Length: 114
Length: 115
Image (cartoon, rainbow over all chains, first blue to last red; front, top):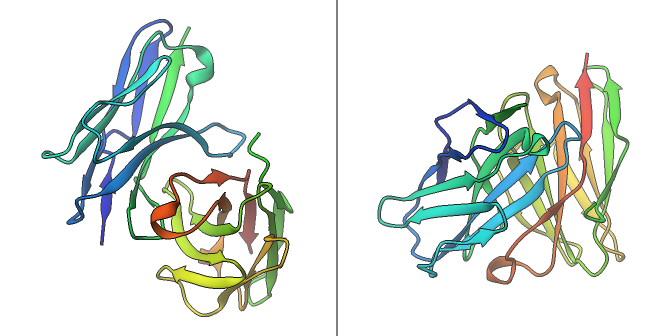
């Protein structure tokens, strides 16, 4: 079974600074999707960014970017110019190309310090 | 807002009782997945419904069952509730199944407490 590991239970960052959240995964598949979801206290999972494994170029969405290292099975999220509204739980997730389910890590709680 | 709505938002049940949770998928989406998120954990896949048929199941016992209706809304039923069933239950809506699914949109969840 696929596993997703987030080794940082908690992270903090000063407002306007940059922070990187780590994620590693284990799979025997060659084609898959990776995601970062944000879960604020409202509980709703919000998609932050998505990466297709067949694309070598790292995905970017405004202040959010990823460092996807397929050989190392690593998928980190970089948040630039951190804002107070970025404070939330961040979950890394994997979905295989043929599977139906998302596999989530245990999450990283991000605190943004004013 | 994703357009995925879940009801109720909070629920308290007694051990041994049965519970039904509801989810309305985003307009145009024909696939609904259910996840259980225990406190301090990531969501765990329960099962998925695609065009009213169960289309994959995670490692959950048969007392977790579901339905999908012709309008693609869905129910999650849990019988013989146990204390460990206390969790946030998330519904995710998507279009298509298998390799056609590129992302899922989640509802705000139902917080179930079993006492």
